[in-house]
Length: 282
Ligand code: SAM
Image 1 (spheres, rainbow, N blue to C red):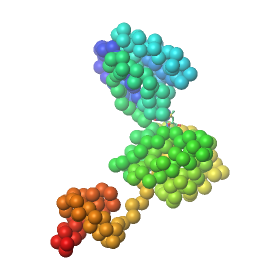
Image 2 (spheres, rainbow, N blue to C red):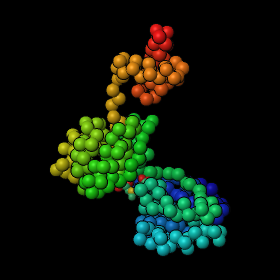
Image 3 (tube, rainbow, N blue to C red):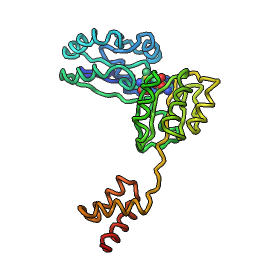
């Protein structure tokens, strides 16, 4: 951190704050929070604790679901008039299952500069240490609380070939895991709890095992659930031949093999070799 105060251009600075451990804030975030004219936050008492810890004296203004529609036009006007403002949420990255989307959208529409200051978010924190496949993931936020809507939401993502990441609360966890086991079948999952805090825990198992383990002891604290992708079944030779013969009627060997790889999940090299053979045979 430098000693000279940062000079901030006017605009909206979307600033990530810690998700538990107070140390998880960037130098840039602290300097920007200090230099801004105003900090817009969900709960002023919560953000005041962070400010006290880092000697940030910038005024705070509450912006949450109950006053957002009413206060947003005034905030946008101030931004257009040249004010620099940080947007923070109670924890983690604003807009990620937190308020801020409409403010960012309207600020951009009004020609205001919007600058992201990246940092902690529970979804990435969970994913980087849970040991679930991380090359593709789908962040689904909070599942709906009503059972019918929740089952529908799970059915919609059951076949997605990616790790599914959900936010959840302790009291709802067991019912959520049971509904997941019904919708996704027996898939592996990780419950990541109290990340970056004293009682941080990663519990891994099949969905039904995890549900059973929480049945009589709903966990305390904040939770991320990660569900492993569905198993890909190996493609049979019959299915590959059927697909390739059809594809080769209109495509080159290379394109037919590429399609078999992306649509059937067949290994690209063997799909190419098989397509060559079928082409030569015909
Ligand atoms: N904006 C935050 C972010 O970037 O992660 C998320 C805010 S959302 C209102 C709160 C939810 O995030 C919690 O109910 C929990 O599912 C998840 N969460 C936040 N902090 C967490 C932590 N330390 N450990 C596990 N989950 C956490």
